[in-house]
Length: 291
Image (cartoon, rainbow, N blue to C red):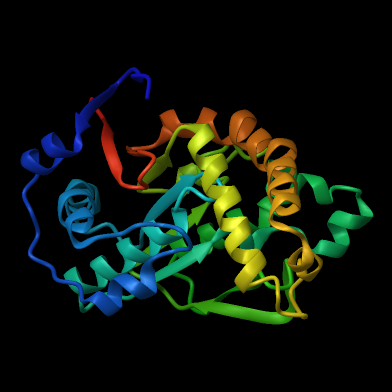
């Protein structure tokens, strides 16, 4: 990964040595329920990478409440796994605090709206989100408003669920993850990043992420798409070769394009960049230099 101005790069060994370790423990069950599809997460990875990440964000936290952590990166790079892991580690560290998690998928425009605008192929791109609702949600969380509701997104239905909501009741710490966390809000005077107290970018070479996406698609074809109620059920009958071609086309025309045009350019806005190797483990850490 190329060096970025105002960042210091460390190998995983340097990162681990230079950070004071917190004493937190996870069980094998914890790891299994956190880990995503075709991803690798080990106790060593937690100890050497993610516990030092918690040490790094502590000076930002102090007594600031609610404290909002943003996690950004491409499709298939491991954002959700990272968010789940950070949440459970913070719950062990701050057992008396209310810690919540949200994906920005909850603020995607409904499928019917995207179809009516002929924007289905742009799902995940900046113009497919309901930015004003997302910013209003963050403003209410920062203002400590009680019982703040957000829509619920279903990956199975590939859509926002009608008349179903999740409620956030004055969390002390909110972890929000998504493709667009560090993007500039179109035609707005405020941006998501204005509400973030700490941000993490999950990075990898685009060619690696593409392969992870294809591998995940093949797993979904065999284990997820077979459900008749799944939006992508028609893909379950594809041959392996056809599935690879389909996943490659989707990546090249949608997810890869979004990564290059809109996600990678926001990497320099993060406080920490975790760069993964082909084995899914973090090999390099870049952290923003303090002024």
